[in-house]
Length: 466
Image (tube, rainbow, N blue to C red; front, side):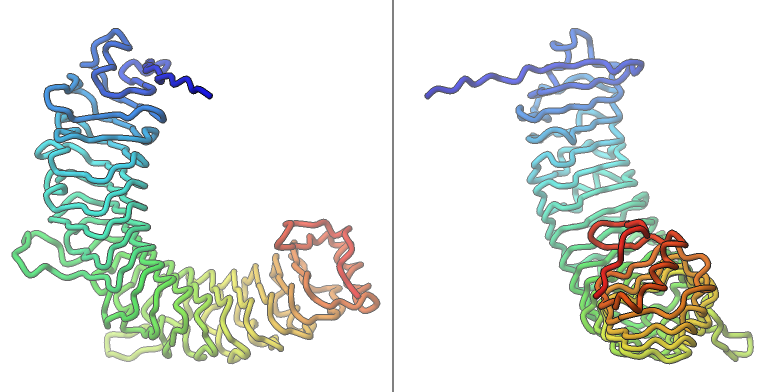
């Protein structure tokens, strides 16, 4: 048995109509560009390299290629990249660098020029375990940085005055302090090992120009190990619009934890095992549109859980409807009953899921305050009956999930649910003789049956019954 090994041949070409751009394949170093292309590289502005079979080496002393105008470098299709001591430092006008998935084990300050022009750095899916303060000191103009899925356990940030987007998903970080990034707008820290999230100045001296209010709009802390929130924990994040705390270990949540989040629109709290929600927990969140409380082991909801607290100049207050709330997710809890006034302060709710709980009965009056409900899921409960009053209360519904309950029949549907387009009915012990009238109604209205396994079925399909 014998094998023939052939070296991949390097090649380069200028994309049509892009005279300052170059695409190359299977380069081992930048020095091959001129010999392959038979043209000088000094006017090159954009360079993309694909190298699946050849290791690309950059930064060897005295071997840099003269590319003074190069500002865009995409190496995301290079499977093996070796950065030697000088790295990218000989290309002073580089602003956009993509080194995603290159197998890098380290990224050093010497890889970049002093006072580098880089404002976009993508380094996802490498093998980086540590990023030093010295590295970031070389990148004062950095605006967007992506280090997702590396295995980072150590990250030191100096004062980063221009950083607006930082993604650190899927690493091993145990803490993070926002104070270093006074202009950050998007921060992804999900799927790490954080036990806390801080916004505190360091013990040593710090740049006095650092703002005390932060413009952060998105904060993703999902899938960490945060168990305790302090009162006024997010008080410096008055512009935050999206907060994801799903998949943590939070056991108690009260209004003081969420104080000053006056711009918050989307709050995700799913999968915190067993969380206790105190009365008026969300009273400060006037702008809230989406709230996810799924899979939290909730056994009951306080009837005064929802409602926005408005305080006048005399200090008098009243609880007003949360007029921006459109979606509430309560799936996968242990709810058996809800107080008739639970949704009283949510009149404009459009999407409500209470599936995978333990409801046996649903009162029609429970949904009466919700005027514009479009989608309701009560699937995977223990309902044995749905009343005509209940259906009349949700008359604006377009999608209704009643699958996987204990329903054997439905009431006369004529004159009900005029806007219904889809209805999930699977997993119920329908009795065919009692279901005949419902079947005729579904067929005449051409209502689609929604099934989780195969999507939409036409109403011409026979419902499963016994």
